Length: 102
Image (cartoon, rainbow, N blue to C red; front, side, top):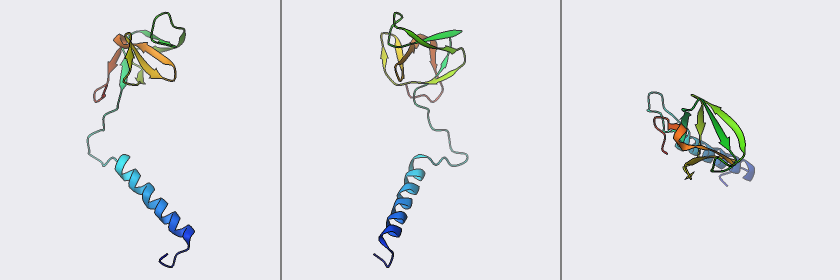
């Protein structure tokens, strides 16, 4: 095709597609406003217990410190925000960061 071997053509097409994906989703021009950080929170409690499920009776699997930043999912159940990977924290102690979409 166009005098190029198939492997070179596929390599070129793959590189062009990867470049287009990079520019479409990851390029951040200097001076452009920051993109929102979906579901990003700051911990407001001195120490916030992270539970294995949405409830105080669930096993504690970790702790977060005041001021620590954490990402989460949009899911809130029984007042607990899903942090992903089987981790839940009390929503009342998570303040959304500016630009967060949750």
